[in-house]
Picture: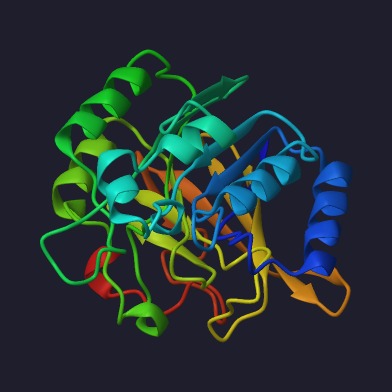
Length: 280
């Protein structure tokens, strides 16, 4: 099985040093096959925050797949936000905004769902467009036998606890196409709440803020994932006092080409609950 460490919403500038050191030690001991970072590396997209994030990544195992979040777009000056929103990212983090990482048994595609602006008041909302979908479809068509993973900052699934937010725009278009591309696992962040579930036959997993003090009623967390084309197990790793501990493990199985909760489709208590039944 492939071992994935899924972290998100690091928010350097608001990081908790003790949690940073514990996560570095945890991942160094685990040595996952892939480290996924689903956006919001920084709090204000400042140069020093990007440098701190880059130094953190240099301490983690490889390979890594890192995508931006809305906090990684500079809010000020507006000239930078509109004319060169990703200049600091490309200079200080990576030249890639939508990386591809493949390994033995998996193919993972990053999608940049953050935007410099939107036709609405809340510019933190994320979108996925047709060009991004076509790019992902083309990649997955070349690695048909592997586990297919998509990483984006904004969620494809919300629970009742996060119902005040919005799922990624154009999800109604994206989900059927991703399903036809045999996507197995969608990883994201943004809402700072940890949960997982099934949408359109695919497993969606969110994690809370892994390093920062910007908590939304839950401790810092990350996902420890073991996955194959038949089984996906997600450990919700939660910060408790001076260490990360597994709070809950949720298991999914692929049955008739669609993923389901291992307990016949109903989510277990305390993790992955609250999904609208139409999404199951």
